Length: 412
Image 1 (cartoon, helix red, strand yellow):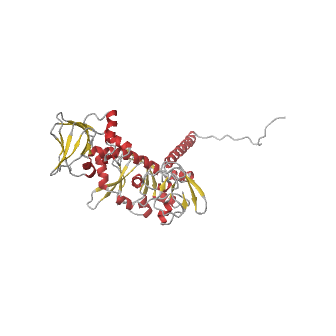
Image 2 (cartoon, rainbow, N blue to C red; image 1 turned 45 degrees about the vertical axis):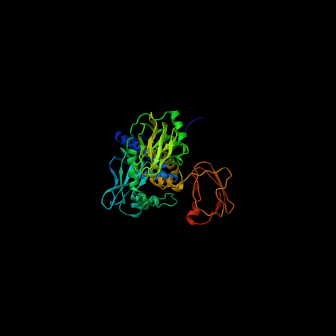
Image 3 (tube, rainbow, N blue to C red; image 1 turned 135 degrees about the vertical axis):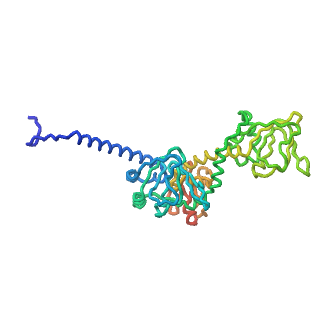
């Protein structure tokens, strides 16, 4: 016979008041919201190089300690001289780092962007803030950790968080160069008419191919500089360049004939279609070394680029390349503690070197004078003890010989 089992006593029904039910629902809702916020923090932490290498369990623990705070443009995250009580992670937006010089003037020494952090030095040393950090984008979203939570996390066993000692580096950054860079970026281009079309651009590229001004530029840089050129017309017997005057323009002759003369020497050369002139003044910021005059009855036509446009074009390429390289360097575990501005200094020191398959990069016992980061491809190495290993994109090697001044301990 089928049936079911039950206790002898009839189950009692629990009555819940409407207030208690509402409180329970509110608590459950708050719990869900907190879990959602924690998960958002965790996703943000995964994109921050400094914290991306710690375990997910540690990221969850860290997320529970973080507080989100937003700053408007012009607001200070911290002020130089104040006691440090919080650690800041820039989740979104841009800030500038400012110090006061001996005259009391504010000098910008660095900028912070997504994934950068600040405030750790004062907390590590129980010291006052060494700089002011101010929001410069319309809105800056920060994740903030108080001092006790900060010290608890960095003192935990097996944590992989390492901070760079950036005091000396910040002092090494030239504020004058940064200000000049910003001025160059902010200056508007002068509208001088249409630039070269595709056919004319190809012709200009062929004209500058062996010119000293373009010798150190790659194909992309040459194309951008030539794209910035504008057309200039000149009359017969008119001077294009006068010896001794300051020069800031480079020329490519399209039509007409020009003579080059040097004081006390006379005529030294003739320019016609496809010839270039004016590069030395752009290279060395020096006065013109000779005079150039048009001798064609119908006048002449030239393509020109001035120093400002030349530098701006190169800066455009360099900035794009630097941004791409910084994003790549952020993925290198060794460089994770560095800010974007510090990675920019690293990028400036790096040079690109390519190796063919099976080519030896260095051998065990060689003197170490370089450190390598793999940008593409894979390498295979063999240590002195015979251990074989491989490294891929973002992997690094060669740092030990530089740090210890010892011979290479492996063949790559």
